[in-house]
Length: 283
Image (cartoon, rainbow, N blue to C red; front, side, top):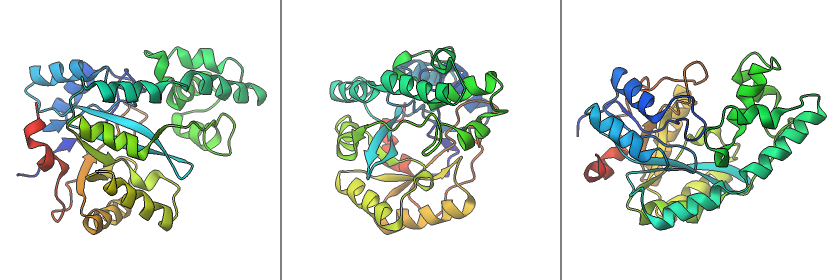
């Protein structure tokens, strides 16, 4: 299979992105993306819109989602690609994973109020199209709007991360359940942006080992938050564990993402691209 400019990780207004599925499809096409997936957090509500928009643009498309998982007391993200987005067990699992976000958001707002930032919950809600999916990104946009920070990057240096005001952990899906939902719906599970997790070597080895044991088949080697050294590191991890390699910008919107849609370098030629596992699932 030829090298593709595939972008298999991005977010729309259905979760915490700033563009609609239709606008993302148009941007992907304009940026030279040759295979695209929309991967909203714990949600597949934008899949049909994305699929229809991609089809209208003759842009090959894979269904996608990004599932929040609790592993070793940290939050890990597992991307699912190429699944049946009407699968009942997957839909039920994602709904369970989304539940509890509102209570968590109220706690986040209360922590921010205590450090002199009132009204954060109501402010964050202005950026939410799906209240079930209120997230740190929505709070970050409000803190920028309110002048508390100059940009989203400053927000995450000062607030909303572990040890900072506004951080509230949440128990998500288990790794086993998330992988099972994806695989049983006909898709491929991918460890998203592995360099972002604060795992030591032992925990990371456990994550990769358990992920593969549960049926996971790929890891995101190239993504917006990975440096070239990290991409090289996870290329070696993919080879060591016999995993396919994925590639996705993790684009959330203009002006607040590390990387635009379609702007990543090619995968290492030694790696098996994840789309080779999904050739029959491309729309």
